[in-house]
Image 1 (cartoon, helix red, strand yellow):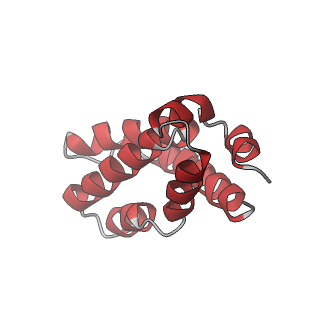
Image 2 (cartoon, rainbow, N blue to C red):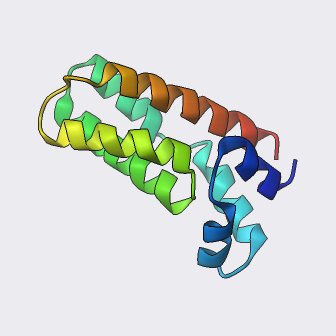
Length: 115
């Protein structure tokens, strides 16, 4: 699978990232592959399970930022929504969002592993 095909599978914004990465596909591949080892998602899951809203917020905020920078739009949106809920200091309404985040995260990581 090419990096462009990968972005199509995950619903990412390849063209925006291509422009941001100085039109160098090798840079996109390099940073996209690093996402596989990023601990933000696991930190989010662990801290939500522990009821630690403050650390869960940090993890959601980091995941949101990484997803946005890499053009992973379908992961960015629910991560951003999650960060805003957690920023307010509560966990009400996060169940559906966490399902969306998990689905998009797994789809993204699976596609990136096929590069």
